[in-house]
Image (cartoon, rainbow over all chains, first blue to last red; front, side):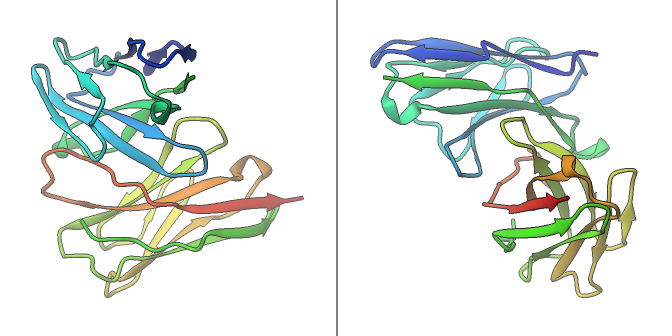
Length: 114
Length: 112
């Protein structure tokens, strides 16, 4: 299994541009999550999904959108990028409550907005 | 979910046990304690979790006090590769989302 994969690894955006961060998992996990981590800080939850077609906001959803059309994929969309969105973005997935909430994380996407 | 308190940083000598404390004095009966770590620039990695009994796996041991208000993660023989930020997180057992709320964590520096 590849686990959780994220693309791209690095990206530089200009203010006002848009982009989609890709996340995929091959472990048949129902639950998927997007986090951001600013320098020297802990992770903040942006959005999460408990299954295909179901998404909900986390702690810091403003400026982002998500969709979950399949179990495997959970893309994160940035519209009108701002310097405050410069961060490292991590995607994660887990089984549901019945099998424990151990989350598996991807390697991250490092985004700079200038 | 209950809030956790951890020391900002700790040092440990290579080969010795690393004992990382976590305070969760407002934990409720159905809340689990989870530990993750983040090695520099990588995604966090799950270590262990428990409810009230002590737990052990191939990576670490988790000791939870009888009143469940605090816990200790033990890395029995720390290596340089264990240098990382360690996060203690409380998660409700009835949660339908599995959302993790990360704090600042403890930066563990393992020294030769």
